[in-house]
Amino acid sequence: MTGALIGLTVSSPVIALPLAVASHFVLDSIPHYADDERVPINSKIFAIELAVDALLCGLLVLALMARTPDNWFVPSLAALAAASPDFMSIARYLRGIRRGDTSKDSKYTIRQFHTRIQNESPKAWPVEVIWALGCIVLLARAT
Ligand SMILES: [Zn+2]
Image 1 (cartoon, rainbow, N blue to C red):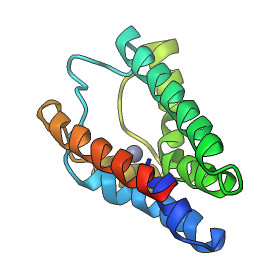
Image 2 (image 1 turned 180 degrees about the vertical axis):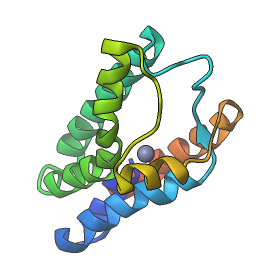
Image 3 (image 1 turned 135 degrees about the vertical axis):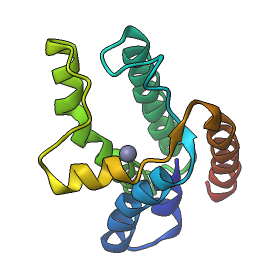
């Protein structure tokens, strides 16, 4: 939703898209929910969380199309750009599913950076709820 907000408020996609990607790293450094102990990357619960996230992303795009039919593409693309750093974890996810390897180790500097800046905790879910509610209010105002 943060990426969509950036796409709605920054008129130039050339600026909005890199800003959306950067927002991902900023938000990853703020306390946010994750529970690797109870929800390992190769668990069914994690797969359900991914499916719910994908469904919510689809609903966001549909809402943007419905509320801003002349300006939904760049905000949708910015939302995708904001989520894109987590696509670096696809290989790790597949490794977890296929081999049970849930290690966060990586030989890639960007992936190491992404792992190092995480500020995850099972207790940080209220931050996610407050952030989501704030984004919903701002998206409703911006569309
Ligand atoms: Zn991330």
